[in-house]
Length: 274
Image 1 (cartoon, rainbow, N blue to C red):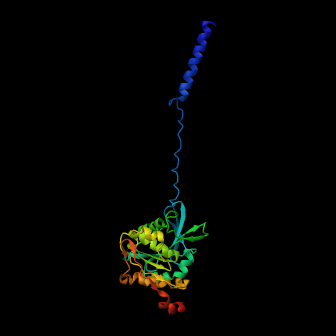
Image 2 (tube, one colour):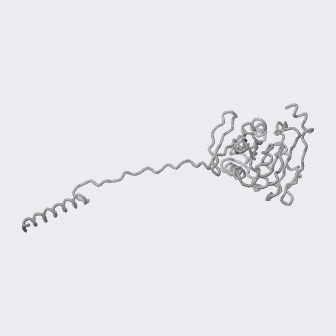
Image 3 (cartoon, helix red, strand yellow):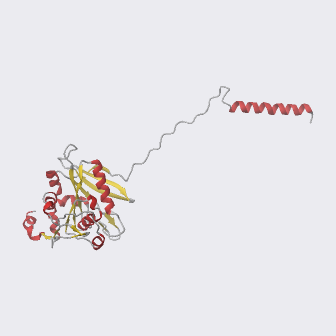
């Protein structure tokens, strides 16, 4: 290869290098390529916070649901007609349905709504979980399994953050299996439960053996020989919110001393009237 040929190849390589550098540089009048701004990703809604919508079947009532311990939990909340952010904080009453029952039917037979309007307190009807092994709904008062105590506590905390309520006046009434759960809450959530009113429900063995409340807890206990007593649940609220100070049933040495009232004869005439 001649020296002249080598020089030509060298000059050609040098020229190509200069063209490449000019094309990649910021000079030369070329437009730089910019990446358009990307929109911020939309965060999914926080399913651990209750989401509520109007419940058309009953006025002033909302249906709410949220995720707790990977389960979808539900409840209904009734706001009395006299409620306002400008009045004194109001009390809260939980009404727990029985085993195999539902919160919707509990709203119908408990009769608490009228009292809530008269005495101005917020009503909450939680829905128990469905147990496939039993083929029914209910509340867990045993060790392990669905944590219904945490479920109720979450509702209490949410209610306190969103409504004008007196958090030291949270009461629980429960029928049958809901009565068992009321006792369980008095033992395991006593810091947030002022008093309970079980109807046709007792304290389970596990609850009794492990009960460790933080304070004496008043209760109004109702029992009957016939399951028709659920028709009389509406009388609980009177004892619960107006005459609770007369109740002498307290938690002694970490256990609940039960003063059972047999309501069959006392309210027999009222039952027939209902």
